[in-house]
Image 1: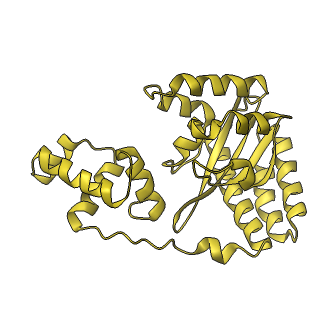
Image 2: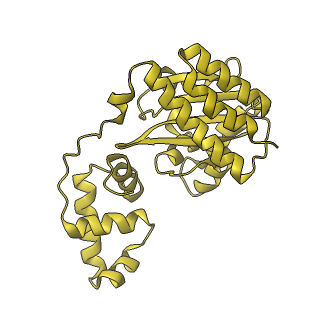
Length: 246
């Protein structure tokens, strides 16, 4: 498929002077690629209603109400995956990533509900600022196969649409600000935090740093306390959001 429409949006969007004009151009692009549904959404916290953070979007009728009523935001594999994702990903990838999670069956039921509403497959594009994850753009509906170059350009489209909308709303400077990080870490703690971000185990870190497993676990527990994290995965997600690791 030609990428001309993607490149055209990147050029045209800079000339949009209103929210309506920008969204019209975005929806024309999505229609060309046969994506029936989309959402440009600020990053939600677990206790927030994600629909209140939608900057633009189109969903199947009644799906938003079902999503809220069933509290899918608490177990949505896409939102949980998004917390640590640095690159675009497919919806279906997220379910596989949580196959050992205690809430896996609930996640499966949620995905089945989504499919019944026509949300069969799609892509999510994370949007990061200097202080971490700011938002995401999700597009989907019927399965659409994008090429690697199309995924790369859609990733740019997502960022372009978000920041242009922020400029139109006069929020770009506020969103660009670095979140204040009131966490003091030692050199060793930063080392271990970075290795955790790379997916290393305590055993691997102990060999690399030439210290005992017990000492590594002690540092990890200290980091968990300082970052107020529930577990290692949560700690890495917080560290990415605060810009402590990248």
